[in-house]
Image (cartoon, rainbow, N blue to C red; front, top):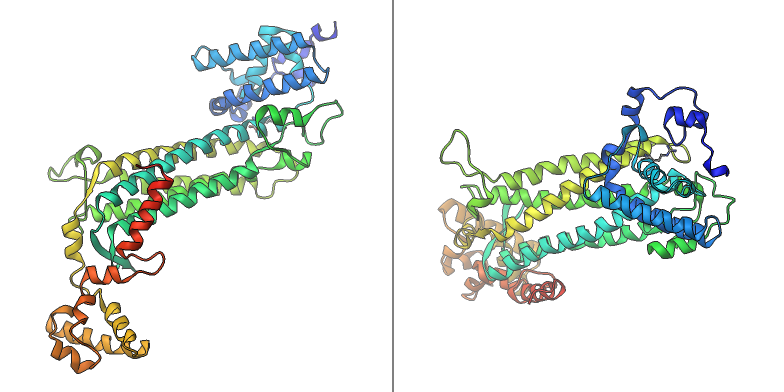
Length: 471
Ligand code: ARG
């Protein structure tokens, strides 16, 4: 039988593609080109894809039902061996696809050699990564939701606490701490949406593009798509094997998540300093100094901030790898996996430690409240007060500027200047002014949609709790 003959050269080189080669691949080449040291992580998805492919081949009469069953049983055994750490990965077999195919053929013989019918590693690897990232997107979504819950719980626990809101890192206007925390809930919510959107383009079946041009064998791509839960099949076989947009998009999504985490981390570092004293991170989540006995360092947020460098680096590396690649598959694209895996590991670890950090930190609400004193943070409220009394905003701005200058000269806060003196700047000012000059008065006046007033933040908090399933 034809499928039992073995090419002698193939025997000699030990490669699945060894037929046309007269000499063994140099060991240096094997180690330079291999990807098995990292793409073994795709094994479950590679096997999932191969099983669907085998079912399709049998349905189309390209292999027999017995061959299909042998392939599927063999693949299941291999999956178990890999899961249990009993599988011998071989560098000379380059990648996960050929390691599995060779092991399958060793197990089930000729049927294994039929698995690659109407398939190329070019569409196979695209399939594996898409399947892998599809699962990872679910996992990331859950981790992001956990982080959101952490912020929402802190917002609930500290509801009503007032703090300085900053622009240019200068005290600007008083806000609710809950409002500040819910801002992060919005950011991570957009990250989840962005991932869900990326998933639309990720969730397309590439298998069946074969090497680049499709195949003359009678395959059924729709069947495979259904088996693997892809809503659509890719439209152009060349684009399918050339495309790594989904990897770029995914890396971009990860980069923005890490960037959001990094901004949060920066605030946690600042807030846990003596200078701010807004945040206490639990002892279990801090580290000490090997020389300075008094130190308690916020290493977790520092590392989260630091790791944004490497995640961004992965995105940049992949963008540069893809730049200038001609159609269709090029080996350069093998570089996608290390960038994706590293970025995924980094972002997932950062998200899960952030959820723990949030649950083990407490806010010093008194210190925050104190910090709203000094800095004339209610100056805009005073201007708005005058606007409500019909003074044009620009004039109000000037009047309040003059009042601030006087306060500064005298070392007073806005609410410490007597009414008689305030009235020298504008007779529109009455004794109802003091209500708007307090931090709480200022906060609660900001009732515009999305504003920091208690009423608005209470609504936002309730909405977030409902969306995130917090009782
Ligand atoms: N290990 C390869 C990769 O990760 C699989 C595809 C190889 N295709 C090929 N024609 N050499 O991209």
